[in-house]
Length: 430
Image 1 (cartoon, helix red, strand yellow):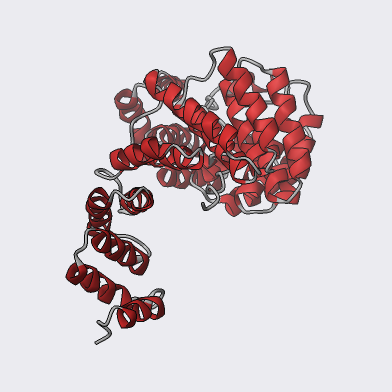
Image 2: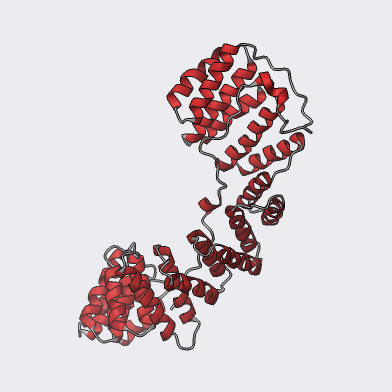
């Protein structure tokens, strides 16, 4: 039996750093600016002189930005667009552009949001605190739009000119590095982020684990994964990430142990948990001198999940159940599982596997039916399938049909030599 497929590493969607659905907006509040502590006191950028003098416009601007934060898109656009189009204050225009950028971002229009933020930054009349807030927001928006290198470039400019280092900014950098396949850089950035705070975020460790794994440092990835589960025993995400990393590192016993502990506690609530545990037992069975015990556990886990309604009765799951049952030498269960997988399967492999088992069991009529169904749905190795069909026909004493099937096998490169030899021996070589 072929080895089970390799397991996918952490889902990329889980690695995207959380971006506020309504990013914090800079506000028009120039009157008491000097009373507030500067966020970027060491910035190299020369701070321009503000040009917003109208209290009425300042009030309207803040009302529009409040509407953005409240999620009132219509009101925000109604107030902010005229300011962009007609205000004599570049400062007011820049903040209004920021507000509309947030609206576009919240609507999933990342490119539109980025373009508006770039216009706001290019405006030239923004105080440093507001300017660098918007520049950091731009780096976040670019990451969300999968513009990873531009995000890194924006972040580098923000850090160089703003003279500011934060844990979140290094986490953002690590995320972009990971997406670009720059794993050593991602590791360094996330470790830097963790060194700057006593409250690191969970998704930072996801990126760190993934970067360790992708760069071949599987031991570090596995160790970190297990630390996360120990620290967060009731967190399903920590469990899922740990299992994914341990599977990637081929530490199957450790992954089984984590999942079985959760199963015993009644914490397995997702289909993927049951399926992964079953696959782990199946992989372990394949490399064992006696595969039956672990194959039996693979079957038990899947059937338990199905009985609870957690595991769906999909063709993929029935195929997995058939493979496990076949390995534990339960031919009846294997054939039944392959039979349930076949109708909705994307190909006919289940029919070929089930038909092969029926041939071994000398149930030629059933074997013929299942093999033919498999061929009709399409199989990767057509030659082998036709040879099995010929054997089923031969078992049914139907020589003409057997010869016809073997002639089809003879047309396939993978089975041409064997099929022609069979045909010659049967006196049907021409």
